[in-house]
Amino acid sequence: MTGRTHVAIAVAGALAVGVVGGPVSGSFVLASAVGALIPDLDNTHSTLGRDAKLGWVRRIPGFASHRGFTHSIVFALAVYAIARVLAPGAEHLLVRAAAAGNFVPALSTVQHLLGAGVPAGLLLGLVSHDVSDLLNREGVQLLWPVPKRWALYLFASASLVDQLVRYGVLALLLVWRWPLGVGAVITTEALWFVL
Image (cartoon, rainbow, N blue to C red):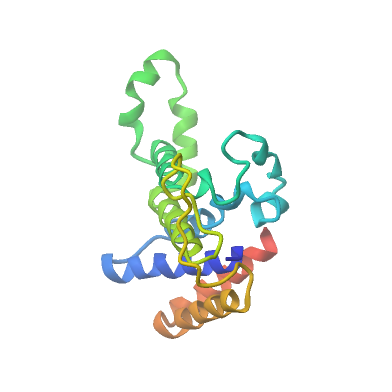
């Protein structure tokens, strides 16, 4: 799927969490959108790989194969764990580390900037990306380091079906979450002017 489709699906997922579990923060929704782009760091033609000049990531062992490590459960949980350590309220995880050096004030600045909804939002975006890429013919190495690729073989990335999924999700956001859906659609599409 294209980055735009991944972002639309993640934002819809974040808003669905809001319906089921109560109001969600803006940082949760935005982190979901960003999390939906992270797995494609292994693709030099992706939004982050191309526009953010992160194509060098492919030279790191394990990143050389598109839809490999970065599309795995291990990667999603690792990103979540890192974000959780940096998220507000994570000071208890760093008590022992703080004894070795005084980096807690700098950490609390990072935590303030991230916001409490970021770890869960990133995880939602990462998982939604992996699940939607399961629909592609190429499949994903979901259980990395096991080399098997999982796929449902429904359509190719960047195909007409991919675009229909994206516009269908955006239309659903407009109808289902009015007026919040309008802001979500504008935010989803506006990300492409920033990235």
